[in-house]
Image (tube, rainbow, N blue to C red):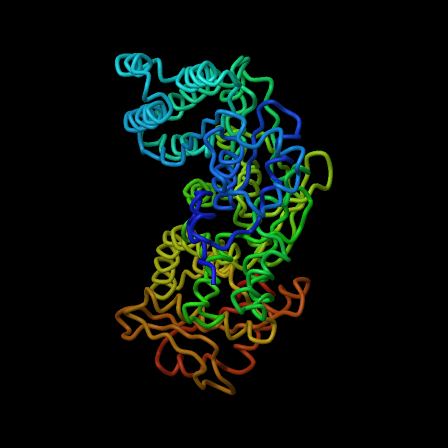
Length: 553
């Protein structure tokens, strides 16, 4: 049985060590035939970009190895005979440039570029001596390298740049720690790419990959020869991620074909360039691994991609954009939104244009986007793995957001029980419930129980000096929720609450009034008045996620 390629992004290892390989080699020909001398391909992280780039390197490289026997690209005989092992190829990946400040990032960039020079020009010490003594020369490193290889082989060079946007994303994420970081990084990468890609006479063609088409006004401002192929483009749609038949064949090979429905629910659902039904390859591979080592289907269904993907920039946007709360609520309720998306939006523009977050989420694989008009797209959550991420992150966001609200609520509760001033408490209770319950899945049949449990849990957090009761007999029925001081010296008021579900939002005000009236009609005051407290009745009505709190006039 073939080994599973967990975390394998080296094509030679994939082929030599007999890993299970999903053949994506026709990408080599299709990418070559696309318009543009410089091609930028953007896809979410861990969807096969680095492995595909290494595959392209091995195919074209003069020094390439015999790794393609039996693969689809070799059936394209005319193309293979013209291009197979015919070019000097430079492959550079910026995936490790994630430092938190410009000083460390600059050092790492220089070290990375110097190592690449050593790999290719170790027999020519003259070029290396220049780099050892001159910092500014590093921005010309890739240009100089293509010139050196062109002279050595008398053939134009193919330049492959993987994860070009990682340094820029890191600079954007950590610019609060180092205010100059973003501008310095953008400047360095602009100069490096412009030097190597614009009017380079030694270049056959270049391919860049990343997640985002970032900093359009800076990184590519000097380049007019870049053709961009994003997740919205109708090109190369099937080469990043697994297709339905590819996943089924993998599951079948490992004796797991009956798992296809569960795997589809969790890891399928991505849409690239209008092609639907694309699976997350990282998560599928880890799922299969979990199953073949003995875990059950339920145990193996985990958010593998979310837990390992670099999502700092996504989390930053979710936690810093208040307008997202209502929209994420709708998405988690399986609604589809129509939003503006600009595939060429820069990271810096997102700070100035909050709606740009939709572009970010779609590019990174956290939402699907299907075009409905020139600049409008229908967006929706792809699968259960991404849904799990949103629920986890949003609940953490709510915890932070409502911490102060809870403090206000408890303070207003003290004021209500000690002084009978209940208006502020009622207003804050309504707001707190609406906000905090916004992301719960509340079924129609059990929603009253869910609301009552939440109210009780919330009240119990800050009420050490009070009794909190539910379903206690009083008068002619049972009180839903009551709260009153354990001793009279802590206050003289008791709050008695009745909760009711409305069948529609149109009736919610009426039902809240009915809840208030029921406290009087069934004499729920009786027990607490006998204990010597003044009772303040509170009627609470809800429909889905809308809440109305009513008080006596």
